[in-house]
Image (cartoon, rainbow, N blue to C red; front, side, top):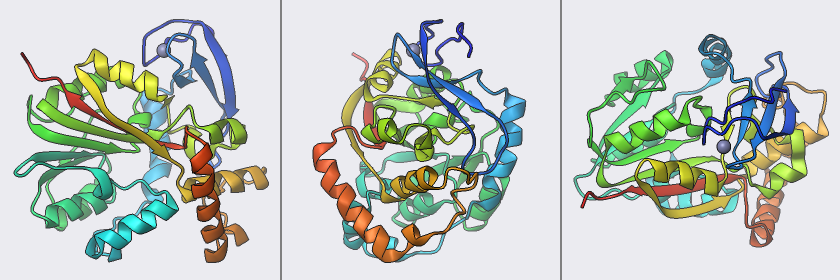
Length: 313
Ligand SMILES: [Zn+2]
């Protein structure tokens, strides 16, 4: 364990406490990764941070089984039904909560399979995606969506004060230089513009219960930094972004993955593991139990925060 590690969130050096020693339980990569907690800001981060070369290699295993989903599914055609289902399943979906002002310009950073991008585009929103995966870019471009290729996670390839809304869904925890990136987010937002982030919650009660089996959140070696509501708010404030809203919920799909990791401890590919737990009746029971426990647990697995860029005086 590296005692002299520098916190990527607050730049405090040393004063770390070990949290977990992890292996990859989802994609089957070999290796061990340590996570420590920063004594100054409570963020948790992987140390040593994998090099850019190592990350490139990890990601070659990552996108191979991702899917591009651009068809108008039930979730697009029936927004009320979608919201109701997500309320039960705990799924965090920007279509349910991202609010876009009339004529507003939107950036979907890390647009992945393009589901949200194509949804907002089909509703006439002036939206552009940014993505690193070649496969995703090709598919989305062919479908007529506007998409920018991301070459480096240090820069957002757009001019200053370009967007009214920027959202990143399960992306921010992948970034190795979050300070630099938060500065970039502040730069591309218009004054008064809003940033939405959804990411695993380092403060989640389920993290404490599942320990190293909290694979939905740890996702070693892809999730490099784990934030609490407070550490993320402090980081954003440094770059002129103040908290508008903050909430959390536990997606049933995340919980089920963690449950399988805890039950099948020797399995290095729990993501591909199918068991009785994945059946529809079992999932419905889990959903209902999670919504009940959410009443008592204030800190849940997926943290969703929105921030407003301070208006210049
Ligand atoms: Zn820190």
